Length: 444
Image (cartoon, rainbow, N blue to C red; front, side, top):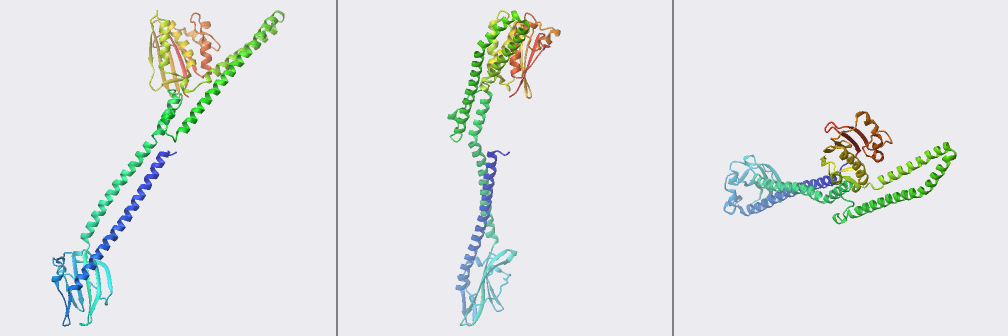
C-alpha cells in the first residue's frame, strides 16, 4: 500500500504540474493575442498615416511620401503599403518589385488577413475601401507588416517565460517533496521511538518531543502500556496470593497423608502422587506468570550489558581461578527475548557452571540465525563424557543429580527454557574442548 507521504507527494506534484501547464497554455494564448492586437493597432496607425498622405488633384490620386515614415523606404523593410486604383497600383518603395494580392473593397469596408509576402515571409494585412466624391475615384488602401521579426520576439519572450515556468515547476515539485519529508519527520521520529520502545531502550514515549497532532496518540499508547503492565502485575499478584493461600491446606493434607501412610501405605502413595502433581502445577503456573507477567521490551535481557554484570560477579566469585571470559556478540542483537530476571537466572546458572569447571577460559557467542538467536556457552574444562550428555537433556533431571559434582540445578534451567520455548542442547566444545551449551531463542 502506498504511504500517505508518497500519495500526497504524487497528488500535489500532479496538481502543480497540471496547473503550471494550464497557466503556460493560457499565457501563450494571451501573449499571442496581445501580439496580434499590437500588430493590428500599428497597422491602423499606418493606415491613418497613409490616408493623410493621399491627395486627389485633377482627377488623379497620389501619395506624398514625405509625410510617411522612413520605414517604407528600405527594400523589404517589413512595413508596406499599396493603393489600388482600377488597374493602377501605388506601392511603397519597401515592396520593390513585389505586389500585394488585394481584393477591391467598397467605401468604408475593411479586411484583415494574413498571407505570404516579400521573401516568402508571413505578413499581416489591413485593407480599407476609400473614395473621393470630387474625383469620383474608388480605391482600396492596404498596409502590411512582416510578422517574422515580431514572431522572433514572441518566441524569445515565450521561450524565456516557458523556461522560467519549468524551472519554477521543478523547484515547486522538489519543494513539495522536501516540505512533506520535513513535515513527516515527526512521524518517522515517533516510529523510531516505538522501535526503541520495542527494543527496550525506553519504557514510554516522550510526549514533549512529539508534535501536538500526534501527542494524543502517544499519550493513549503510554496509558495502554501502563494499563497492560498493571493488569499483568495484578495477575501475578493474584496468582501469588493463590499460591500462598493453598500452602496451608496442602501442608495439612501432607500431614494427613503421612499419617495415612502408617495405616494404608498404598492409599498414601496414591495421594502423595496427586499432591506432588498439585505442587508442580502450582510452581509451573507461578513460573509462567512470572515469566509472562512483565515482558515489555525494557524488561528484556540487554546485551552485552547484563552479560558483563554477570561475568563481573562471577569473576569475583571465582577470582582464585582467574578465568578469562570472551564475548562475540554482533551489534545487530542488542537483547535476548527473555525477561531480564529469568535470563539472568538461566544464563547465570549456566555461566556459573562454566566458570566452575573451566581451566582458564570461557567463551560466549551469540549468532543471528534468521528467525532465531543462538546463544552458545563453551569452556575449556574436562567437559561431560559423551555417554552422559544424553542424561543432561532428560526431562526432570538435575545436572548435579545426573553427574555428581557439577553443582548446577538443571531443572531450574529447563523450567525457564520450557516456558520461553527455548531449545536447550549440550555437546562437547570443539573449539575449547570442554562443555558446549546451546540455547536457541525465537525472535519476537
